[in-house]
Image (tube, one colour):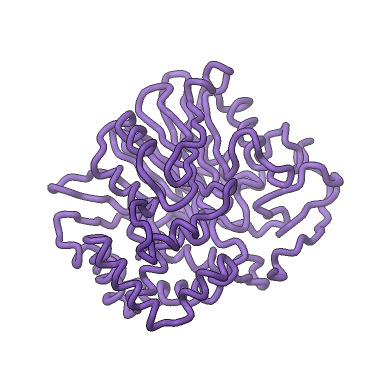
Length: 417
């Protein structure tokens, strides 16, 4: 195991405002956390936008102008990602070791993916990278998953809907001890952009993307629905399904991010999107979090390859007195003892913002430890009713920056990964 994965005890003085960071039954928002108004006023803290992905263009032209300026950053990220692949899966690493065989396999897969494969090939050409490397990048979710993510759908007393998410990525993928960060997490931030996806001369949805990654992990459609993705730790990662897809043994499943891009393109309403999410076949486990336009339109769908494992709806939360649903990376209520992210977020939302959720308040919840941690690349805020989407770079350089925190350790200690 990488040395950065070894738990290190870091002693901290006292608790913040009477609320210790390890307490589950407590809202962890602190005065030292990032403040929405400060981030909103600072261009340096905002994910750059807005680029336009025009689906009326031929697939080989859609991404070229978008990715060319980040060619160097893409190459750096892919180099690191490939070098750490054996951590995610030794079996996958064996697939990649023979570059000639992997290139033949990649050619076959890219052909099978149709226009998405054409997009990936054009991206490779634009940034001067082997096509198989760009395909590998676009399998990133299936290989490693969005480790540590938090997604929240909430409504206020007047039925206004807000969907927020932290996207956390890069656990065990290298370490940068000088900055106390994970290498891949740092590599991904320069690739972040806000993108408007157009078709027929009209914007059909907004998304925050990692340039070169053609699928969708975060998006909102005005007057329709919003969607985010979290990895599902229960049941492991999607490598078995990915292996069968790559080998040609079973290609009935879909890459999650590409499937969700199709959901955004082809579905107009929350109900339509929910039906599609419930029935599509995937390559591995995932949580798909949907928000709608009307009060009560919110759902967390826990998926395996071919079936729904569980669904948690906003309507059920409202009946219990909560105007929000929160998803991290575990089936509700099976969070392990070492992961204390869901409960503090739920307490913040219910105790402080149950009837008055908005972008600033959602940002405050997502910016508190441990939801904001060393793996957090960005925080996104979305409104289906206005179509607004904002995304901000997130960092965590404080001592208490582990993605997971023990609930039952001494009150003067923190475990930092």
